[in-house]
Length: 515
Ligand code: FAD
Ligand code: SF4
Image (cartoon, rainbow, N blue to C red):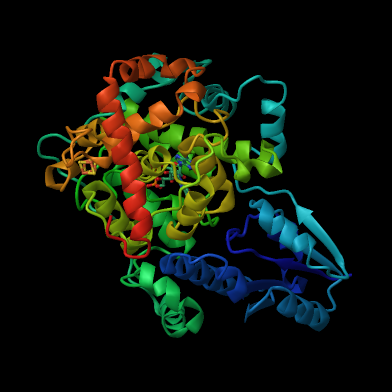
């Protein structure tokens, strides 16, 4: 009997369960990696994401070879052809794969119709296993992130003093919403030069016919992301030493030209297995314990909440959800995604700045994603599914598990409130308060019904008016709807016609990207 292990592109560490189960016999365990061009062509993915994943796969394959594993590295249109050749070459009788995190990929493997036994080993990429989350969630009326997070803090003994949270409080969110006023001294980011393996991938993509369309949307170079576990560990160390102690206060702030602020830039590495979330949380806790007399707890708690709380929760909810979740559309939003999401070519400065940054590096931080890119689509009534496809294509850290919960659930409220307790809809007031974008915009952030009114304003009020009947049953919307009721009928009518005209103009300029 010969066991062979197939390592997927988001399972790149030696401790993953399929490899771990064969470590004792590594010299007799054939391992395969496959770059499928058809799979990479399913969406017009950001070119830097393709480089990140393929270069990281090639580096990890080399690492396994140096450990003595017989490694096959294939590039092919499909997955089936190289798999069958490899099974034949090594006379493999059992294919072992760690359970894919993304459900569509698990289904793809099941449909491959291989004639040998296929064994899925339990996925150990997250802090909570799938079953542990299901046990936590079962029987609860609502899946509240705060409850889950507190349970995680206790269970893994993170920032705990006995049974109580360190500092006497679980949550410091209120201290972590400072607007970026005055002169801020922002930290540097840690980037890397491509080595010869990465350069080979870049050259391949540059000359490949298959990715010509992607090149009209995304920049391939300069590519500066890390591609090995060693580099990912350096980014973690750099974050802890230079950013973590100030992570909290300006977590929600946005500044023109500042791509990453105090954010960790760890999601691309966490999401392909170069880092494990528990080691990230423990490293942050350790640094805090070493520096607790100087470091503010709100920053450390704010960061740990993201990884031990939000990231684990979003993954757990994905595991727990029905298969049709990605099709949800509670508001029945059907407008097509505006072309400027692909080109960045819009006079709305906030969107223009962030979309340009996404084009350059495939990354934007959480509030840029949630309160600008997502918020605009929500209030303008864009199809959640079109928006999800765009996020999936555009972001360097995007995968099915993290798209569905963040875009369909948290961002678009398309599940009717399973994940978020109210829609993340906001007017220009929020963006102006939390950024400097409005200062240099063609639109007026104070106007909502004049010709020069900011589209975030007229769409915000139009959204509330359009969905009044649905929203009035949401307890956290009561006060907001009262503000809507105070608008005069004539102003509301003007607002609604601005919104409707915007869509008409948009439809007439599809493909020109000049909204
Ligand atoms: P930091 O702000 O420094 O946070 C630290 C870590 O916390 C992140 O690396 C991430 O691993 C984790 N985290 C925080 N919030 C979330 C969350 N809601 N879901 C999952 N992980 C979280 N995250 C992705 O990993 N991939 C995506 O494609 C993605 N798309 C998003 C789309 C929308 C509309 C929204 C609202 C959020 C999305 N997120 C996504 C979550 C979050 O915005 C990113 O994880 C974060 O911005 C990554 O940058 P960072 O590593 O600098 O994060
Ligand atoms: Fe964005 Fe409106 Fe501000 Fe312009 S005025 S930057 S469109 S929020």
